[in-house]
Length: 422
Image (cartoon, rainbow, N blue to C red; front, side, top):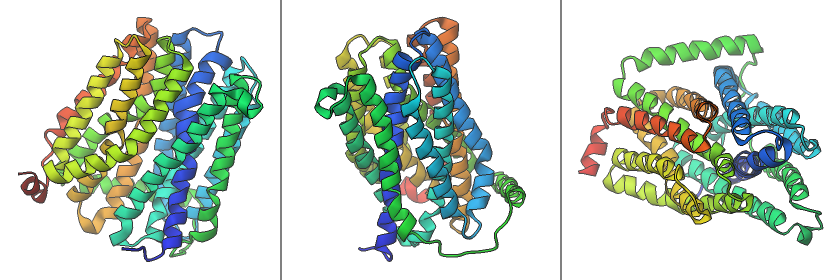
């Protein structure tokens, strides 16, 4: 079945292809490595882990606090696309600016990274909101899945090229690995800008309403948040699920953002970590589809709980890693559950909420997701400093998965979901 507006849907989904290069190459891949070995080489492993964790936590916290304002602005006619492109432009500029930061200037690197991460997350608020302008209700699932799929593939392809640049810099006319990493940051900026163009040309907002100023948008956003809280009080299963989601998705995102830094702290070679991350990227796409099928066959909640348990076991296992092969196995196992946790969480939540209030509740769901990766990175950094051991720091994330899974066990599934699973 084709889309009602296929060109708009594909143009919208290509933005996931575009910005996933930043999430993969910069946030999860090269920045943690380069920060520890190039910009902050004078610091101990625990100190650099603390500062990177603090930066990730602060970026997530700032976006979470801004989410009601951004969400309200996204609802105003004519602003979603403009604001998304504005945040994207800022993110692209910050990514390219990493090329200019000299060795040892870790403060500048961290500041530029912080601004880029904020802009990246801010742009995603408006990008998510634009889906209703390109797809009708029957197409939303397929359009969203298309974005996820293109994101895994696009981010993985550029990351593979960037990995090749660092492993064989002479093939690309580069002097060494450091120069290859710096040029990789520029390639992400160019890739991001190039593949955002289809959205800029072919995605149009369906309705243009009265524009408001920032103060009015902020009032509307916080007013909507208060109204949603009122509705949640009468829906026990929904707010219990959101509470569980808050904890376990924080663990998921922390693993994604801090895995490479953790591996560096354990003494693994950066090339091993980057190749393992690349493995995760390509395992995640088919695994997400498989877990989606498993959820339909055996029920979303049981499969989601198993996936969360796998994440927790991976964290415990990783605290005792000794060989490079261990990290490859770790990457593969994470890839098996990474996409599935996100997809199953969204589908389970969709079945629980009132259909006539879907937009309002999903707005709150997305805002809550912006709070993720606040506790985890900060927890890792604090535990690392207090214990003096990077190995112990990873065990702090297990607590997030345990709390999230425990709360999820008390979430009552919709009746249709129970019948299907039996």
